[in-house]
Length: 626
Image (spheres, rainbow, N blue to C red):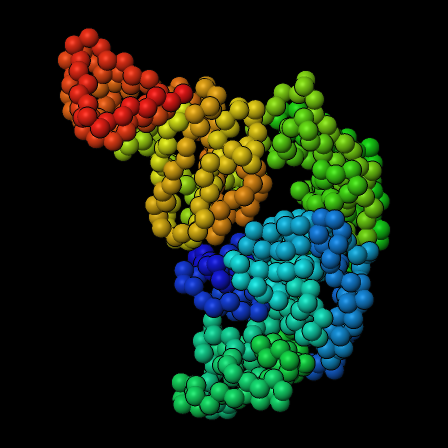
């Protein structure tokens, strides 16, 4: 069963592994809001924890003390994310210092970490201020498959709430081979070791997902089945403490037996930041088990390994060709032990390359379908093996000119299988439905209905309302674009609606306007729904949501004619079921008598047919406006 945490919680993908090798993706999300916190790592479901422990027992040698563990060297690939202009980012000195501190903390486990390959810099404004909910998928495209990937960002948020870091529990999924760190927390001497603890399966000392741990030890204790599953870490109800003396000050809250809590404020898996600096013997043993389990999974599935590989040579003969509304890259595979290939793209000749795709080992082709074929735009591509030590290919350039057949970009893949789906989209005018389309989750989260759904006619100068229905399980945002100039680009000024505050309401409504000078003819409307925020780009990929395209036909503003005798200000008098405005050409049909009692009325033109009458009160004024 899938469970996901809402906006204020840091959530991430957890891939659960059957011991026999079956892989199932599980994302976590709760339907209840909770307070923000400093660590975004959520524990696996209880049954997944048990499977991990059962699998480890089949592999590990029993009765070993931590002193007997062989020393293991763990490679790390450091990804430092900076602003697009190359400023900001964690300093090399801070990185080295943080690794040295963590190595001292993991010395009792006989585990040491070292940098594999050169530091990788990612220069991107959006990723530098990382929103895990939307940016995790973009970051992990850079993952190498022979080291632990650690991303260092200027800021890290989840659903807008700041966090210090996020990790992943043991998994064979290469996307889960990553840790994301907030730069300032990297240097505090404890957060990096804390997140690494999760990477090797440690739970928070105040964990409650497996049950609330009793203070009791010995007879009646539940420390092996609840809390963090360890008995040498005291039960912890994270609460008030004095950071100067590292003294727990909560004398109010008690466990289920009425005992006061007395947690270990020095424990690295607690939230007592200024105090924490150590692991217990039980935690060291559990991390060793987590290490064995992660190694077991990587051996079984072969998706990544923690063995720093020799330098992988650059792909050669890289070419790029724009055709069929996409850019296809081809290259010659020169490596013999690559962990796949990463495809990076930039729109600047001086760099700022960011990963846009990934392919498996021994591949030599990739198709980029998210391109925007704009004559003012140039794309630059390069390819590199997904190894910590790898050489980039020589970049290739793709430019566009007047001879290019331009196409609408195909949105990047999204996941709509977990109720982040547009179940119905409707357009209405004055309560009359002009379009209503019901659908289920689309492949890769995108459907083009421009030829299968009849286009509604939208008049210049009119405002239209719309209704979007979704299952209503989670907070969703929506954005609409309308390609008014029909140039097959959704430009910033063609964003006609964006939901300001995300909502879990199953029925979302809004409106958009067709400008008076909008070109007439058939064009395209794009509707995008995204979990927990309104989309800001018409083409990019994001994790959860769906995109639908519809054709619409923009027509000239219709003439307004009377349909009955009556008051000018009564909508029922007119064919549009509205009151004419300064934009309208008005006709009073024969046999109809229209009265105007007071004020000034505006119109673009007026025709009173023979046999029709227009009765004006003495103080009424008529204003004609072009």
